Image 1 (cartoon, rainbow, N blue to C red):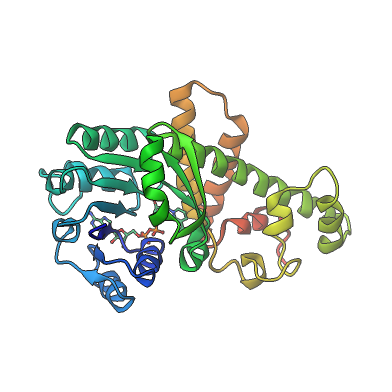
Image 2 (cartoon, rainbow, N blue to C red):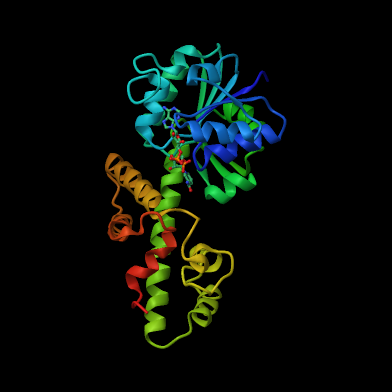
Amino acid sequence: MTGVGFIGLGNMGGPMAANLARAGLRVQVFDLLPDHLIAAGQAGCHCAASAAQAVAGCDLVISMLPAGEHVVGLWLGTGSGDIVGNGLLAALSPDTLVIDCSTIDVASARAVGEAARALGHRFIDAPVSGGVAGAVAGTLTFIVGGERADFEAAKPILAHMGQNLFHAGALGAGQIAKMCNNMLLAIQMAGTAEALALGVKEGLDPAVLSGIMAKSSGSNWSLERYNPWPGVMEKVPASRGYEGGFMTRLMVKDLGLAMALAEHAHSAVPLGALARNLFNLHASRGEGERDFSSILNLYREPE
Ligand code: NAD
């Protein structure tokens, strides 16, 4: 391997690139925000003056950007990339493995993947689960769409940033699987908050009720591992004022992607749509930057 080009050094990309550098790889990085670039340099990455410079000479490149328009803009040059009208795919060395880790709409992932292949490159969509804490700790889950051989080729690199590596299927399948998972998570979290709020209003202790449901048929990840009621569980966002974790606005974004997917598939998602409305309402009340388990506050009586 000659080196890794890494574009997008925000909350997720910054620590992911740092983990690659910590593993001894040469990581050439770029971000539009100078502060993010400086932080990556301090973490051992090589700072580039442009995205094109970051990918120069690399046989593997990674992007970690906010949304589909940024990914399309960067790689195809039709949007907000730094080389608009002249996408970065055209600047890559032959047969480069392109890994997009952003959570984006399936159509954008497929468009970039197909364009990469047309230019003789390899591409996988590899969105992650695990949040900022997982990115820092190198324990992310990667959910990959694309050719199995390309997934196998990416595995040694992904293993420096994550613990669980899944091949979901063909191009775009990583995004589809991630959207299904996050839609289920949103439904589960809202349902857990609703059940806890009901029990507490009728006089139950939230810890006692959580313990009972965790060992009964209502058991689920949000209840057992990420309990939304403050003080029931240590080291979860609910017990530190819903700071850190997975921001409500990002859940709203993912639910929007799931709704678009459902429309494309002509698949009914009534619970997903309701969850999207609930999280959207919650975000509109100024809770967008708090962890998504703060949805509990929609149900709870103010103290
Ligand atoms: P972020 O906004 O913190 O970081 C995005 C970075 O991309 C920013 O530093 C921005 O300057 C940079 N950027 C945008 N366009 C660019 C361009 N053309 N060239 C270079 N840099 C560019 O976002 P994040 O929280 O790191 O999330 C990144 C992706 O990961 C998103 O798709 C998000 O949905 C997904 N994700 C986030 C989390 C989370 O908890 N934050 C968890 C799982 C998945």
